[in-house]
Each structure stands twice: as C-alpha cells, then as structure tokens.
Length: 247
Image 1: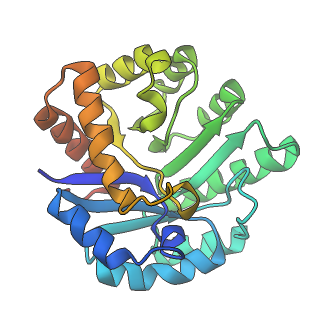
Image 2: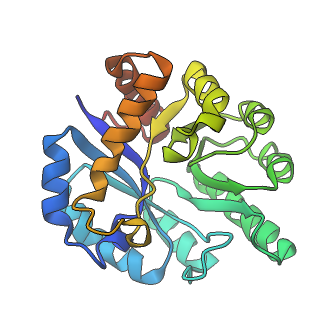
C-alpha cells in the first residue's frame, strides 16, 4: 500500500519537530509521498533540503494565502518559482471569510490564477466561505484544481464539481454532521487524503502527526464501507492525474 499526504506543511512542521524519524516511521506504515505547501520565504528556503531527504517523494507548491498572517510571499516569488519549474502547483490560494480586505484577496487570487494559466500549472485551493464568489472566478480559468480540506455545504461542493478538480478528504469531514458530504465526495471518485499538518496543529505529546493520515483513511473506509484497497487505488489515479507522476 502506498499513501500520499495530499496536503501538508512539512517545512512548517520541521521548525518544531525533526522530520527524519517521523518520515521513516510514516514510510513503514505505507505513507510514501507528500504534496506539501510553502507559505513563507523561510519555508521556501527549506524545501531543497527536504526534497533531498525524500528524493522523488516530495512535491511542493507555493502561494499567497488569503488569511495566513505569516505568509510573506509576493507575486515575484511565485513567478520565479514558476519560471524555474520548482513547484508542482500554485497554492494554497483562494478566499477566506476571515479576511476583511476582500478587494485585495480577490485581486491576489486572480493574479495567481493568471500565473497558473500562463505556466500551465495546477492550483491548490483554500476556500472558506465565499464559495459562490470563488466559483465565479474559477470558472473563467480552465485549470486543474485540488480543493484542499473542503468542509463547506454539500450544495457548494456540487457546484465545484463542475470544475476540473479533485478534493482532499481530511478530518474535518469525518464528523457526523458532514456524513453526506463525505459520501458524495467518495462517490465522485475525485479524492485524495490529507493531514494539513503544521507545527501549530500538533497535539500535546503527539509523537508522530504524520500518522494521522492512517486514521483519515481508516475512518473513511469505516464510514463508507469502501475497502481501503479501493480508496488507495483511487487516490493513486488522482495523484497521477494532478501531478503526472505515479504514486
């Protein structure tokens, strides 16, 4: 079994926890590949060494986040990464109801979508609230999308499926009140699994937060009745579709 953590923040996590033993243990549980996100200049600087630890097993994206205060990336940083083909996608970018300056948020979102279109890169999306506004923008950009950690309404999910997109399944939709959303996401067959782990999300005395991915997979199987082998096979297909690489 080969698993991919389809959205995480390994550079951020590495500030507080040495990654080598965590990754080694995760590998023994079948977690072989990571799609990680860089949201600051300091995180960007960490990725060459992280990729050396995980040759061929770590792809990273970068983007100007709509609501993360520590995000200090600029458009010129993203463009430089695009030109050098260092990132597999632009993101995570999008819209968040917690951001008051909606004009800025929308303009920086569109500017990054334009970059993705220019360089023919996928986009990792962060959509919290503003679902219809986000869709109205996205429908004008025929790109491949990975909507990470979506836990909004079922109706908005159905709208987003009109895009060329996959979704990550996270702990957020394993709750009873999100049962219908989980079932529909699984039925659609365009899913991967994620932890979204950062150093801020590590629980007290949690030895290896990378192993949360196993719980997400197992709980998805329990709640849906879909065998783990089928879930992982679908994830592998979607990983290749998004990145061009085999899992």
